[in-house]
Amino acid sequence: MLTHLEQFLPNNEPDSLKNFPFFWVSQVNGKYSQLIEKSIKKLGIDNTKRKIILSTNALGQASITDIANLSTTKLTTATKAVYRLVEDGIVEVFSSESDERISMVKLTDKGQELVEKINQISIVTLSGILNSFDEDELKDLNLKLKKLYDLM
Image (cartoon, rainbow, N blue to C red; front, side):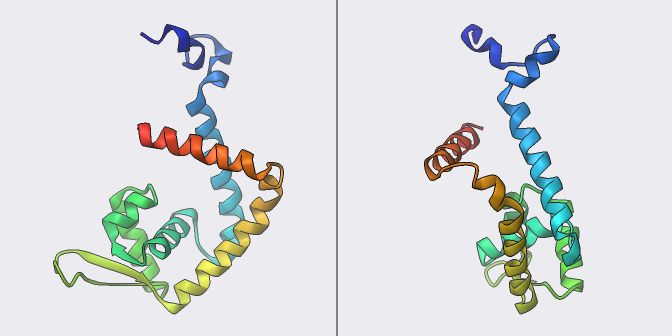
């Protein structure tokens, strides 16, 4: 079935993982999370809160479910994080006008300011890494990662 692609799948050989694309996706994601977590610590937020804040910013106002999906966070984790962010004055939660059972979330002014700070920290943290690639390489990388995502 995949005989021509077996070299890219994990097997009993210890080095086989290094040919497995999802190994590298996982490694890059883990390293990225570590770098960002360390950088945002001074803002008093963790990576989960960062992802919720940035997802809320990207969506404008959205349901907790939509925010959880965009931030690739479990719904229960996202819900807990949202309500901690409410306590911190970073987001506000209100009922949807079309369906009062749905909790909607939007950033407060304090949340908008935090987005700016998170983005600045990300630029400082990642610019050296991204400068190692030219524009075409980054576009190609994004296209390949998007294709991988779409196929899943």
